[in-house]
Length: 327
Image (cartoon, rainbow, N blue to C red):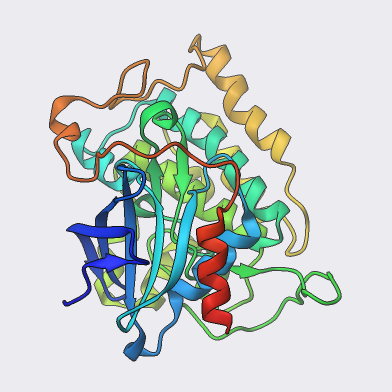
């Protein structure tokens, strides 16, 4: 690839990830002297996921658990978005912890992520693709903060003109990760806030059980996964787990399509259990210490780079890049 610099100031250093969407690079900001992260997407593919993702970030603005964006635009045939560095994903940390998180870690993550989803939903967006690899921890003073990333499949659940909730009905079909997507998604129905909650419930249950009943059916087709999710009772899925998980999953299933979740109640389910069990809500997780640092094995990962100081809003570089695209 000939592209080595973005907007004249962001120098691509090394690739740390790739996929159907494009590639991710650790990038050096030659003006600030700090490292950031760049996602690249070839324009010739015709799939402008990054453009959509940038505009979601732009509308979300700054919030706890939302990555800060520094720049978006086009360079040498690529869409590019530059954002702050983040730490390991929960998928990676789960592997490091030998596929088992403690009850304390899962309950604290649940409380944090409910707050993050509340912020996203308050801006009329649903994520639509929540999974462990799309949840990453911060770095530095934000190391104990879970961030939700990858908004390429996100959508507004209110009509931007009327501000009314979108109607319930059939949609284009399943495009999300099978393991953690909601039952309604399998059925090809329109998604709402309840579906983000259901996906989060599956993630938290997975972290405690180390697996989900339908994981082995993944390669046998969508229908078998959907059938397994529908036939597995909440009691069986949450057997042996703290009652908070069963309550949370059942709540997501009973919530009507256009209903606003009671986020305070959902947080209390996890926080009250933490206190009853004698845990300190200190946001210390299985993989880290009181200051959020991971151990040496994890800190050697190329994703652990010093993150620039987070901005209080989308900077002029990010806005300027979007205007270039619009013109």
